[in-house]
Image (cartoon, rainbow, N blue to C red; front, side, top):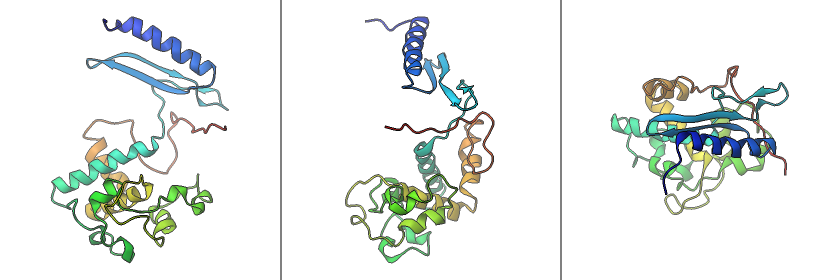
Length: 213
């Protein structure tokens, strides 16, 4: 079966997504590339419903946990540069580690096998969700809790581990997490629309919404 032509593909995708957006089942931006060329891009729904601002291909979104691959890339860069080793215990870079963390390695944080409680699911996080929180503030939610398993024993997705990796990046590089990503990953790759920070949001930033079931 032959692949559809770009124009047929664009019509098919636009028809489907327009119907989904009209039924309020989809809101966002879609880009399809073929052999290095953009064959379709369009926005659907609203970047800000209250203000009636539509999504466009220029709308920027908070990427949430897609930040984790950037964190992992930064750690691997630092290993390539001889600044750390994945086999190192995190206590070598986080001197105030509680005793339970002292055998955890950087690799185990990367692989979600450190055994840390995920702060996102702790009752204490509900009180600060949606507020500006520092890495140390987040660490305080789980640093004194017992491990769920021995380090390296089993996989359990962990936001907590990546907070610690961000702290290690700052400790090793001497830069803030945002500064390191900007100068070592975002700028070299030409990702000019990708930013990190807690300041004023860009005018083209979408407002986040949650679906009430």
